Length: 192
Length: 430
Ligand code: SF4
Image (cartoon, rainbow over all chains, first blue to last red; front, side):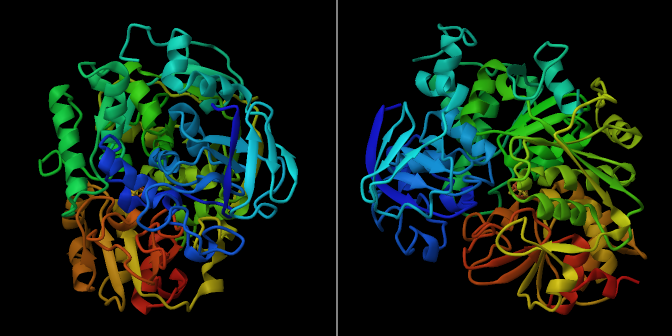
C-alpha cells in the first residue's frame, strides 16, 4: 500500500452494487489476457445510471469512451458500497481502471473482503457522510497510514477510520502473501 | 453459542469462539461456477503453480449455470475452461453443460445433489451461497482470490459474525410465501441491515415451511448484507438430506443461552403480500400500495424463485387462463424442469399449464436473473417494467439499466401476469 496517494475524486451515491461497478455482461473477459483484461477498466462503473455518474452533476463517465483507464484515483461512495454479487471482477475493474482508493461510509462484506484479500483498491471508511462534501474532480490527497484525507480543492480535512486488523493483509500484499508469512501456506508452495 | 458460531468453531477445532474473532477454518465444500470459476483457476495456478493439485477433488463442486444458452464466444470459452480443468484434475463433481449431468443454478443443485448437510461449512464464489444455510450449516459467498486459496489449501479465514434472530410465528396464509417474509425483513432492516452478521430464521412458521421455501429465506440474507442465513435443522431437513445423500452429518443447534445481536418477531398471519420496488431489494411496498402499476413483463425463475414449488404456486393462479404480458418461466435446474413435465395440477402438467397460458418456457439456468450477454433468454433490453421472482433489482441487474424491476412472490407475479398490472394474489386466488 502506498503511503501517500494523490489524485482526482469520482463521487457516487449510496448502495452502489457490483452490477453498477461492472455490469454482468462484461464478466466474460479473461482477467489474464491483456487485451481482454483492459475491458474491465473500460467498463468500470459503467452500470451507474448516467444521471448519477460523477456527482453532484452526473453525466461524467468514470472511464471516458474508448479509453481503458480512468482519470480518477479516488472513488467516493456512500453507504453499503459494493453490495450485491460476490464478483471479484468489481474491485478488479476499479483497480484495472487505475483507481487506488475507495472511501465510503460503509461497505458490503464480500466487496470489502475481496479488495483486501486480492490486494486491489484500498477500502477506507469515512466517519461521516462525505459524498455530499466532495465533488467529482476535486483534488484529494490521502496519507494511508494516518488515514488523513485532504481535499485540496475545498481545503477541508477528514480523518478516516483506521483499517484495523486487515491492514496486516494489506501490508503483506494479498491474502496469499499473508498466509505464507504466517505459515498457513508452506513457503515452498507455489511461485512467488 | 449460536448455530453459526458452533459450526465455525467445529471447523477451526475450537470448542468456543466469540463474534468478532478471526479464525482459519477447514472448508467442507467449495462451489464455483462459470463466471467466477475460470478466474479462480487462474489465481490458483498463479499462486500454487501450473501443476498444482486441488486440495481435495471430492470437496470441489463446479456447476456451470450463469451464461449457458448464449452464442457469446467468451462465455462459451469459460465453460470450456471449466471442462478442461475438471478433466485435468479428474473432478468427480463437475456438471457439464450439454451432458446428462448438467444441473443448472448452483444453489439449487447443491441441495438436490446432497452437498448441503447440517453442521457443515460450504463456501461458494457466489453471493447467494448463503442459500445453503437453510440446511443448518454455515455457507457464504466469497471472491475468486479466497476461493483460489481454498482450492489450494482447503482453508479460509472468517470473522465470526454476530447473529440476528428473526422469529416468525403463526400460520402462513395461502396468499403469502417465504418471499413475502424475507422481503418484509429486508424492508424493515434495509439492504445493509445485517452487514457482517448472521441471520438466523426461527419460529413455528419457518419450521412449517418446506426446504424449498426455507431456501428462499436464506437465499436473500445477502440482500440485507448478511454474511450467512441459517435455519436450525429439523425432521424436514433430515428427510430431505437423507433422500439425497448417504454422507454422514451432525445437526447443531443454538444454545438456550446463545447471545443474539438483535431479535425481530413477526406474526405471519398479519403480514401482507409485498414487493420490492425499483431499484433496491429494501424498497418495500405492500402489493396493495402499488396495485395497478402497469407492466411489460413477468418473470418466474432463479435460485430464489425458480423452484418446483414456485411454479406450483404460479400455476395454481395461471391455470386455464392466458397471460396478457410476456411471461418467462425459467426452472432453476434440470430436475425442476423435468418435474414441470411430470407434476400435474387438475390433470394438466405444470409445463402445459404455462404453455397453454402463453408463457415463454426457458431452459434451466440463471438466464435473465443477472442480465447476461444480450442474447440471454428473457433479458431486459430497454425500459421494460418487469415483475420478477428473482432476488435483486439494482439498476441493470436484469440487463438494461433503463429497465425497472419489481421483486415479488410467484403468487403475486402470476396474478400480475394475468392482468398486465401489479395485482394482489388475493384477488385471483380461489
Ligand atoms: S439465479 Fe440469479 S441469483 Fe441465483 S445464482 Fe443465478 S444469477 Fe445468481
